[in-house]
Amino acid sequence: MTQTRDCPCGSGHPFTDCCAPYLCGVKIAATAEILMRSRYTAYVEHDDAYLLASWDPQTCPDDPHPSADDGSTWIGLKILRTEAGGENDDEGVVEFVASCDVRGTPAQLHEISQFRRSDGRWLYVDGDTQQPVRRSQPKIGRNESCPCGSGKKYKRCCGG
Image (cartoon, rainbow, N blue to C red; front, side, top):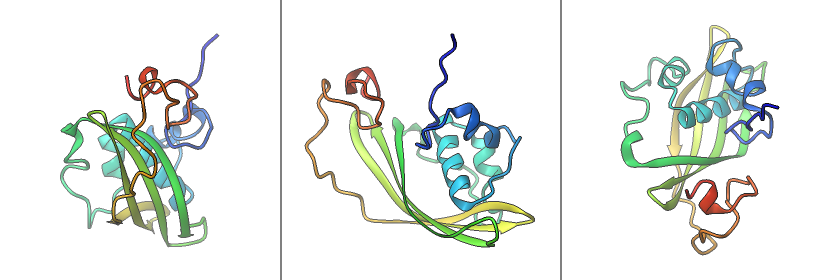
C-alpha cells in the first residue's frame, strides 16, 4: 500500500490532490489563496519554475528566493486572512505566517501579499513583511511534538 503525503500548504489534503496539479501546470489557481498555498508549496519543493511563472512579470526578481542557501527548511503555513482574491475578483490580499527552521533555530515569515489576476491567471505581485512573530513558548525540545502537526517527535520530523 502506497502512503500519500499531506500537502505542505497545510490544507490537510494529499499533495497529489492539492498543490501538485498547480505546480505541474495541470490546473490554474482559481483564487489568490490557492495561488498563495501553491507558491508556498513551490518554495518547499524548490520549484523555481512555478515561482517565476506565478509572479507578476513587473515585480518578478531574477532569483525567486535569494536566501535559499541559508539552511532554511519550511515546516508550516498558516493563512491569517484574505481580502477579495476570489474567483470573480481581479485583485486580492493574503496575509500568512510561514514557519521554518533555519539551521536548528525556529523562525517565521509574516507577510501581507498582494495578488492580481491577469489574462485569467492569478499572479503574486509583492508582499509587505511584518515584524517577526515572537515565539510565545520556549524553544522546542528534541523529544517534544513537532510544531508542523505531524504528531511525530521534533527530532524524528522537522528537527532531524
